[in-house]
Image (cartoon, rainbow, N blue to C red; front, top):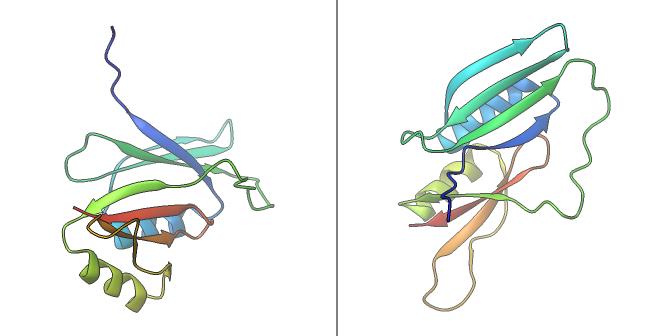
Length: 127
């Protein structure tokens, strides 16, 4: 059986710099590269964590005027953090759209959701 390594996940964004700023400041991702395709009127920005095993690709289409419809099939991406409560308080203090702290059952890891400028949700889970 062939092994498959996850490479990236892509989301389309309305305001590229606002989205890059969100993922850098809220989730400590770093821009690994940027590719501009002016002839095709779009830009790709790749963000990664410090380990660099997986990237979030932000696609910005130049002439888009209407917000994207996320739909009811998409749910979220997820990240793990060592100090969940500290992360939660930092995101709330920064004014991000943050859901309540939860856990699925007693003894399970806690989590919450944070929403980016385009409405995409990220689940933040305790390590």
